[in-house]
Image (cartoon, rainbow, N blue to C red; front, top):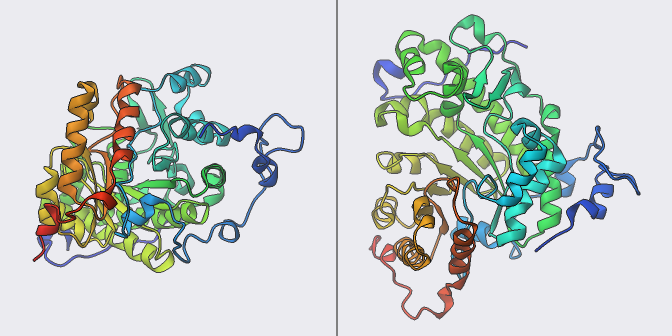
Length: 420
């Protein structure tokens, strides 16, 4: 089905915008229809399940909610919950060993048993407070008509970039059946981890996804898509509008499949000047947030932008629950600018994990003190770097778990002094 042009408009945009779990042996695989009793493999056609009957994460909150979910809602917590972006990946020896057997990234990120195994690797090693599904922001593209490959040197490659009205005709509504491996994986993760940690889903923001679709893959300059802002704005608006609707549906699907919380990655939003971000990224994030707040009001949304120092106040107005800071923003300054009526995530410099453990400890303590005792999720300011010592990752989580806000006599932190 060809997409219908339904561009968004935004005022003020001038001419630009008019535990060590043995999950494979679990009875859960039989329960969900992946394995018959005695089977050793994953069925090629897993049984369909009405996810909304299994997980009612869209419906209500509970006192048994994981620590991370409570912090995202700015409820009282005893310590800052902690997880890491890219916490499952090449820095782990167990992942590298698995990748040798399965060298295709798409195989690893689109095969249910591999997704679950990889997602649980850091859980079994470090017990973070968030277990994020092993996936990619480009994973849903084929489900709405955009085919892509991942090459060893070039990375993601879009087979047919969309830069014209003709290109838009290839788009169609998102077919969630083509993403069943995502839903199946989230259901298994939710059952395996239970309420001990939050299961995290994620998506790419429309602008960020559009950069790949328009540029044909990764880029350092973003010249083609920025040119479209001026030379073919109607095409770009139509593309972004289509993406916002597809991504919103994908988020609801992840929540209904078991995700406690969703992070929106506008990874390349920071490549736009603030006034251009207002025109070409924010309206589409606003649309997504509005849909999720209506359909899944209890599901916290986190928004992360790489290089977001000039966008913090603008990010807050999207209506998300938590703003992720990259490591170039001082946490105390970020908290002052955002206030205490919104959650905040981050933002230890990933390179600090290569430093002496005592230096890492000091940096974690500084970040936690600056963020305050309410509404803070401890994380890095970017993904875990390749080559990061696993010992440092373990230490990061050990330090996070050593905090006890209940024993702090004076709960008035630097952040609490912001709002008088």
